[in-house]
Picture (cartoon, rainbow, N blue to C red):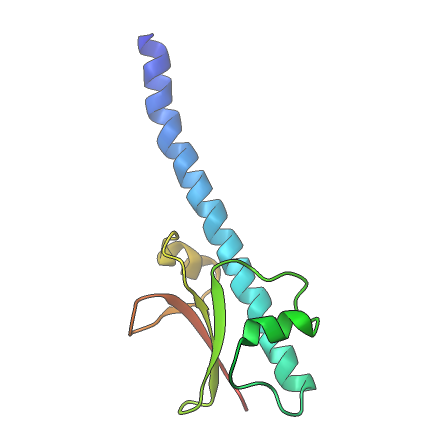
Length: 119
């Protein structure tokens, strides 16, 4: 029993860390996919949307094949930028930033974001 308990004590943190890293990798990949979709939208659309559900628009117009959970996209008129935001709090931002260095933290709420200039 002591041997099994010792093995579990070693394996459990390793397994939890592997799951956290896998989730961070998925979030970083979704950021990259959405970033590319917004850039494509800006290239192909004469008047890209600046209000409403921009993620829904990107999905409906075929720029992405699925809508990832926990993300939103909005336009900031004062900066003329689109912002992709991860709205959940279940991921270590450092792990995501190590995978995708375009990710930064929103100063207003600490959520992970990527900013894409309109022009």
